[in-house]
Image (cartoon, rainbow, N blue to C red):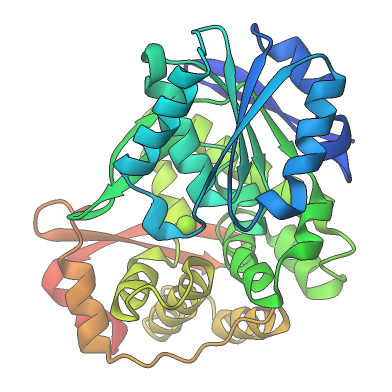
Length: 349
Ligand code: MG
């Protein structure tokens, strides 16, 4: 089993990575929770695959188990789904000692974590991410929340889980598309902090080595998030590929998935920064080659003008400047600040 300890400001917890850990999840959950009642929150895609396994393990471990299934998809990431969870918890008389298990991808973790952070002002929650993207991305950082009609993730809370369990076997039921989607973020970690990870991705069979790969990504995210608690602003490097990537995602009306847009964003921004001499020569070619190996293409169906325009309107920007993350070479990143109005020029250099 691979283990990683995460020291977040408000809590310390462990991430355990092991094939088939789902069927003995009770053993690891029991020592970290107080109550005996578990509410498993999952969606209509994941429930038929893994709910039974988790439910059986928890029952065998002596827990009283309930479950709540919501409709799979980003459109469920809103307050009404969270209200349904509150009702389900109340109807089954959940108290402050009891806990939630989030079984599923990013949306499931976000809404379950938010429900856990607010029901009775906070109950315990355990995360079991089942997609590659959620395993490498949302297990660390404590971000929970929902979308509103005005935008994504506008309401939420920082809330740490008691435990994260990662079962790489759940990746066997992901489509090739969603495996590649997660690889977009995996490649990002190599680019921003770890040239050895990048080399490894180039040279090994990714699926066969996925435990090590997930662990390396989580270490990078943990370290970067920890450094940021000292307010160095370094957390921003996790957004490599995301400025242009988010624009592309929005322009596609979210028909393109997050990880594939991040990959396009990384390739686009690195092509520009390499031309400007800010990135070591040959980096873009290496990046494109690895993305292709992982099933991610560099096709972009939108104009640079539209991409830049969308990034400019991003609410996360501060004032007139835009912080973009660049890599000086594979494994080393830095923040480059430009005027918002110069982003189009930057990209089309
Ligand atoms: Mg992301």
